[in-house]
Image (cartoon, rainbow, N blue to C red; front, side, top):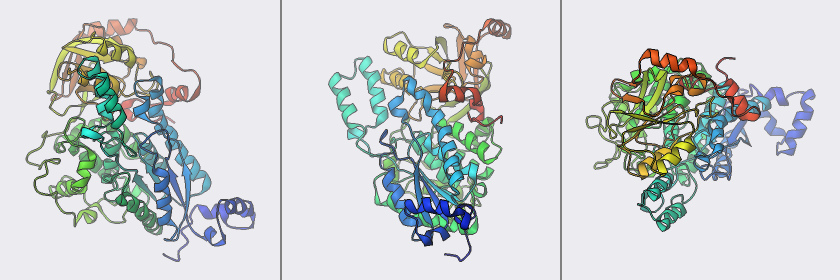
Length: 559
């Protein structure tokens, strides 16, 4: 511990006679005389009993404090909210999901900004609280570390939350009995931790680690494990090094670090939500990053991980063979990653990876570079007359690389799910779900219920789905989301009619409505904007301020 005063912010709150009232209040929460001379570390916990992803994080926050306080800091635990995508999926409640990312970022900025914390350690365990925490720390730009809450254990027979969603579709098709559905429901989620495949939580944890904002292996640890406890304690110790050397998020979250994160996300076959969140995080820290950068970066990066939802394995199995560190070492040695990037260890990425051992012989979770699942990125940015300012597809190649079919149009997720389950949807349909964008829903719901129902009914290779909403990391099949401009903004998706022909090409990166420009313009001229669905509250505020999905759907883009 240095003799240097590391209290750049907290000393304003606690030094001097005039701050006696502040000290008096802090004494009530456990401060003693010596604590006022220590740098204050905000320990941001997303603990909540509303979801298994975060139900254990109160214990992890206590573990962080075991690291900060002996190392010379004063850890102060506070909470921000979290919500559950999995529980709210397919309901009106899911409209609050993406909104929560912005509320969480606002909360971190508000609490640690108000209280004068000198550094921040934030612990996230579910899809939106992770980028939300990162954005909050980036806004304040004080020494910061992110900790992943860890992944869940699988249920019996390799089941997880996606197994339950897909069983609903199987039940509708008559392939899953009432008893089988109940058994999967009862056992698929055995305890704490984030959803077990390379869904959005594990994708974002991996991207954040690759970016350098969490300690090595933080993304690849079981939620309940000695490794995760040690990760938390080590973060408490590491934050003091960052404080001493004044290493801030802006020193770590550089353009090269974002490119590293994107490349690792591609290699892992990660979620389309990573596009949305990385754009938002880049905007927050002031790094130029655009939608088309994902295509350019993805040209030379293969998809290597055989992980669910499109693959075979779960995150818990990747953990057992070493997590993502050996993958990153392999990519670094091949010249795919920038090893000069600074990380929260105070060392460069290359220094962190120097002594990482390769994966064990015989494992087939991560393919070698010369035998990829797909030679280039599965994340495709598509453009065309149906998405003039871009759309995001997740195409692993297992679904095929192109699809042409007849539009079947739905103005909400619920209408589409009903059409799938009752047999309205048939082979060669391109399902169009609109008015589900950031402004139109509002909130840009994830279409996990429809995509899972399609897979459960065995139609994964028979239909495609296009939406101005987005997809869960658990979605798979021939799916295109984030269509912009969205329907509520008068984008071409608003004037598609059932029976129109739609063509999608994931090699040419195009998505087109097979109509003449004249017909499209004639329909747009007749289109009338529907009234907003909410006129009060957080959803109305979000709709009024949110930027396009192609810009990360942030709420401070145009301030």
